[in-house]
Length: 139
Image (cartoon, rainbow, N blue to C red; front, top):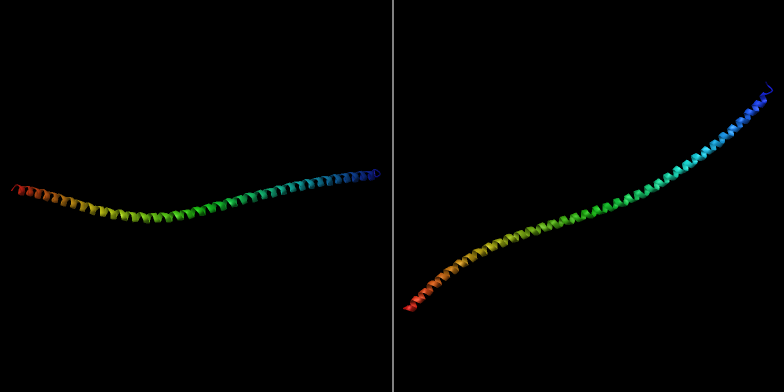
């Protein structure tokens, strides 16, 4: 039984050596696989980062464009407000002129009525004088 023992130890050592070689091979393959996965993930992360940089740049440009548009609209609104104030002042002036012209119109109508009355009186007077002249011619 003891004589068989060294050969058993030798076989076990040989099997152990094969198992160790297979384990080291498997470990190497796993390390290569992990390295490849790590490289792929790193590549994806770099690609995603690049995409994010592009998107952020586009968003930044869009934000700047919109802010510029808002500033332009603000300036335009301020201009329109100033214009509206000027138009309001001009309107008030025009309304004052209309009131003045209405007053002048009223005065002119009063004068016209007065002139018409005077014309009617003068016509009546002329008619009377004409009648008197006729009477005087007959005498």
